[in-house]
Image (cartoon, rainbow, N blue to C red):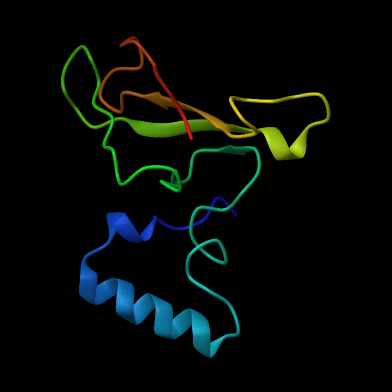
Length: 104
């Protein structure tokens, strides 16, 4: 499971409903259901070090989508930044557009 969107990606009324739904099932929305840790293809990025920071395609301005997350915690002898995540974003309109990188 790649997880659900970060709370910052949801309207406030939906965040409250998602939190209540998760708590009724003995978990938390954040990190329990959203923004799953570890290596993953696709899914949603977490914004645990910064506030939501939409990443736009440099070629066309379209908001990019998360393609791959490389997590320091899941691989021995791999350290991204200060034990963070390297995230690769791609353009949903044209895959030939440049990728964007982000470290959290």
